[in-house]
Image 1 (spheres, protein in one colour):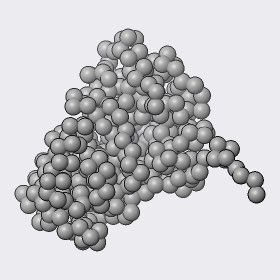
Image 2 (image 1 turned 90 degrees about the vertical axis):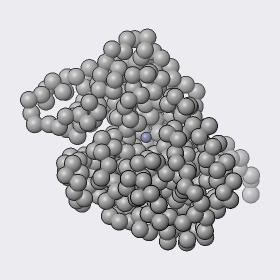
Image 3 (image 1 turned 180 degrees about the horizontal axis):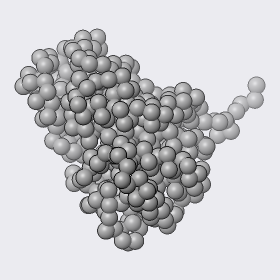
Image 4 (image 1 turned 180 degrees about the vertical axis):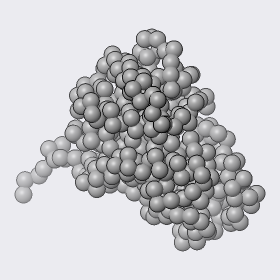
Length: 383
Ligand SMILES: [Zn+2]
């Protein structure tokens, strides 16, 4: 048989997923058992301080070494600090409890050390929990790099009774993050570029990405309204699953493209730092649709949904209403930096195109808001 060189073959498909995903009211009660099943007797627990209010000072009776309080940013310094604590304590697993940055730090500690990892998101604001990568920021909050570990968490435990108790803005930001998944997977799958999983997308990843978008559009509003009353309903459960599992699997194995690069670029402007990942991603998706020249009805559907559910649709909505062209140039340069996922778009993208797309997205957002003004709608949570 003639030898076939790897370069002459199409990219292999890769689907990455956590070992187990558990979602439901009271599911944090399974944490001890899950840790035990992984063979751990002394996990290092990294927690967000807010968790003490939910679980009590003893973190719900978690076994293991002294818990470590998260320092506030998933930065190289913080990762080093927690890694040192884990090795000093002789930890045999890592449990991360909190928001996306806590979970990403837990990944960056557990994976290089070869330790089992359980993550317990306390909010549904990003798709970080299920993935194998960490988003690392510098200590003042600007995007620095992605770190890839080639391993996903062993278990993800999502207690919807905890999630519903979090401020509503988290859920809405998670919807913003989830809105990007389908469009980014759709665009990047048209190229021969690798997804975050290290291969091309499976049918499973593309289908889950689409299901994520359809679920958010269908159930986003009733989920938000129920959560405002502290009610866990089937719509709320569906949106938590879309924000966390569907979006997580969809982005990692389906591929990222322009929306997340625009997000990363936006972090270069100080004014956006009070706005969360999913809020900036929402504006990033609208920008991406403009950049790609998607049909008006597609853009309208997305922007109107954002307005309905309370997501940003203009530059002012993410704190940079006074941005001039020079500011936007800075965002666009950062968005188009080497290695950015914007280069997974099926055409060449240059900074000038991104500036124009942001201006067009901003104008469209203003226009749709003006048209919908006067109709019953919710105030933006980010205000
Ligand atoms: Zn995201």
